[in-house]
Length: 500
Image (cartoon, rainbow, N blue to C red; front, side, top):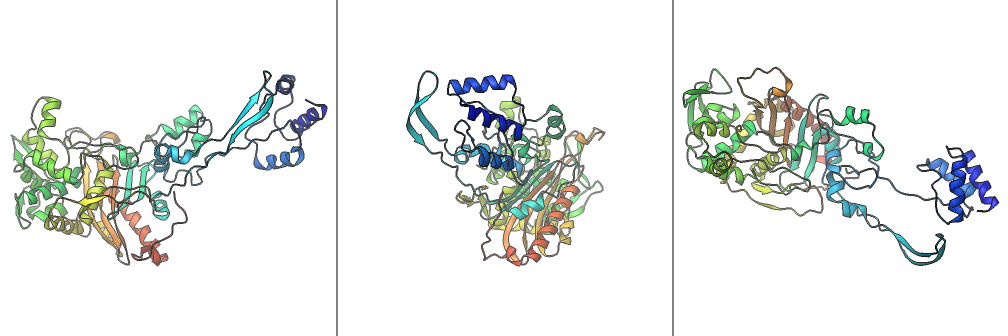
């Protein structure tokens, strides 16, 4: 290395680089110069400093300035479970779209093929290949709707919220809460920071697709649909609810302990009457109920882009192979109201209600480039019409009547309260409180597509927190449609300038 080069390196250290030019570093630089090797003077230099170095020392033959691109998430925790994150060192996707579409997003590295001598000096260059940039990926997420959803959970809540175009399967909102900031993984994370941000309520878990819950009373839509299809009841059938049903020497309680009295099948859904469902459960075989649950997509993958759990729809064969015994009739009563062995994901639930809305079981899509895959749901039009009629009343006078306060949005809904422990146990901790469910579909009265939705809030004791959450979303969505009338247009295709 020449004296002029040494002068440049020394001045560079004194003026712009944070480390002093120690004897150890001088020796390392000398060896690098002698054997034609490279040594890192400093990494992660601020852009302003890099510009000054390039201007003042760019002509130094021994100085190489190397640039690289880092992933940046400008909206921090926005849609973090969809986007995922990269590992810091390898820059490999570890979750979300970053992992699933790693190859497309990463592109191809460039390289230089050289002939060098024994000291590392380059004698000739034989081959050179430019790097190839990764592909652009366009998500179906709606930036403004997702932005609204990011604010609707309370700070101490955990759960999931999804909004999907009922006809095309395009997922416009997918939120798992709490979320995380993917930028945190681009730098080293201290043990304290990890404990404070990543261990409380498991923010890395995508509750929308990878958590399993009892569907609770949302499953009553399946039970009623099965009873209608099997001709066990007629749409006009009634039942007298005493507040409980006696079976096998024990009492199975209704949601309303004093009973609903004489109640129609539709009102059994509107008021979420357990007793009527118990009566239906006595008259339908578990395997037949499983057939209809499968028709709505439960117990199967949705074939979503991101990883997902399958859940469980119990059958007699499953119980025999797993426990060596059949499903007892008392267990069937629990299954009919969405408890017992049943487990589902929020994504499966929103797909079910989308099929009630549109008449087609559609595959949820996360990429605009994915084809629309839908097939007619295997239920009669009269059954689907009956379910929609009941869901409309749930949102106007039933368990989700708070949604009727948003007058410019037509909503259809079904709520649920999922047990997490035995009813005999005292609720002495939050973990023993019930999960809250609400699912359904809506559209603005000014127009626009029909959206299916689901909200699930963990350990809150009743369905009300989930209903309030959806109400907050619909109020903000209504304001958006008022401020931007074209947003609700069913004929004009919006250009989404900002996408997650």
